[in-house]
Length: 115
Image (cartoon, rainbow, N blue to C red; front, side, top):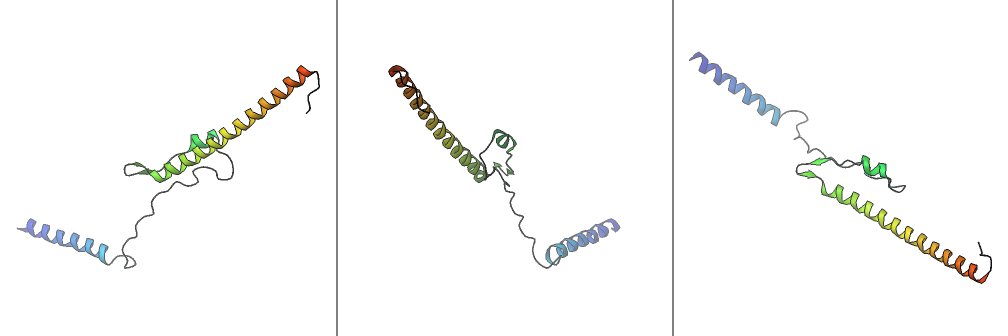
């Protein structure tokens, strides 16, 4: 009987403490939702992306893996950088081909190539 009474009183104390903590604790305001963890400074905005930037890139974990928005942003940036580099390489290859053709035609005609 004594043990039963002790358990009932202990249960009442625990329920009362939890109720006070939830309802009336703190600033009388419910707890705010935590801000979701976001990727901070994923890739440098002021310079081209380097290999070291990609190797140090780490995405915060979400309940089912990674946040799709963070991954999509990083992949979009990398895709844009690769397209820009591909266009630059194509321009340089065209310029090299034109310079080589000019030099070859100048060598055949006996003239000195212009620089």
